[in-house]
Image 1 (cartoon, rainbow, N blue to C red):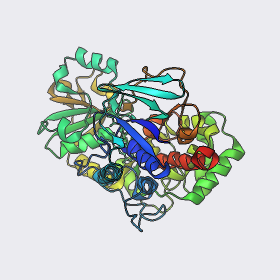
Image 2: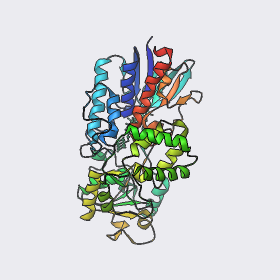
Image 3: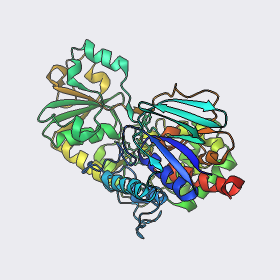
Image 4: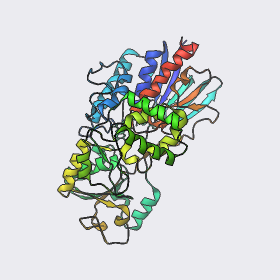
Length: 445
Ligand SMILES: Cc1cc2nc3c(=O)[nH]c(=O)nc-3n(C[C@H](O)[C@H](O)[C@H](O)COP(=O)(O)OP(=O)(O)OC[C@H]3O[C@@H](n4cnc5c(N)ncnc54)[C@H](O)[C@@H]3O)c2cc1C
């Protein structure tokens, strides 16, 4: 009997789950709800030339092989090119090619661009989904893969900027897509507000268009720097056994354990305290026993241990770990250092920028001289008020085999359940559930 499933989203997770369902279910119809066709990704735009992945080829390799179909590069294994940080368009092309393969192979049973989901209702043993433009019923499962496409725009920040006389038409609420949002900003004085990778990426793009940029954040700190990001299954097993043995009971306990485990392994973490200069972090990041080596194995171990995910995620997403889990890759750090040395980019504390002082930053910039302010304050998933509360929700992909209809969160959408949301490498673990469930459940036999 034909299985009908729905997918909200058309990005990296949506494409991977569609490919996996087509491979594993004998007769499946896929209804893909988004404004775009399957294989369209904001993060991995095929036109995003010049922006590099923050995850290495080694860390991405599981996801790329989970896409299936595409011939696997023999050099792409978990252990080898951990120092390669390829352009994001490389992933974008792999995702788009997978979607095209599904279109060619699954003609007629892949229904795309059905519009953003408006509501999901339960009708007995199946789900009915309404979108801006269509209504589909008889769905066995609905996969939510809406990513983090909604930029966080703190209202109090907008109020403060308005109070300081900055017109809203001089504020760009999100830098993405870079090639359209920042297209008209050249040779200006720009304030970029944010402390993460998006803020740095926007600042680099602007500096390379002749702008003088100040990156401002509450801490005035940049992400740390890594030259390598291997994916070592042996190390993941080591973390897994230590976590189970020592049972972290709260985020502070987990943070202490992490410092001691990294030291025990011979990859000591810097103490979070004083700011290390970018140049120093660049020098240190090529050391053979750098702290970046165990990061992916640690996240993999945590993601595979549901009992410890919440506590671990809280530790990994907070100070001092967040700088390390979401670090700059070496090529981006070198670009940033170059622009800082030539005075095109500087870094300030937000309190100094919007505080009582007339001037801020090493260049003694005045707020009234800023032409454009770009907000790069992170991302969030929109709430899903449209889902019927009686529908069970899970992030286990094998729910497609359950007798009850389920909503299944995958990709970044499942960030409440996985350790580091900003990562493709969590996806191949989620997809592996589908195979495990198939073996467990007679429906898949
Ligand atoms: C600029 C940037 C750079 C990144 N770089 C990396 C990286 O190098 N490595 C890495 O691992 N991760 C990176 N990430 C994180 C990245 O977003 C994820 O790894 C990956 O894109 C997640 O895939 P996803 O399918 O969950 O979300 P996305 O690929 O973002 O797809 C979400 C889709 O959901 C759609 N949608 C939203 N609401 C609805 C609705 N109501 N109904 C239907 N559809 C909806 C959106 O239109 C969108 O198409 C980056 C993120 C950004 C923003």
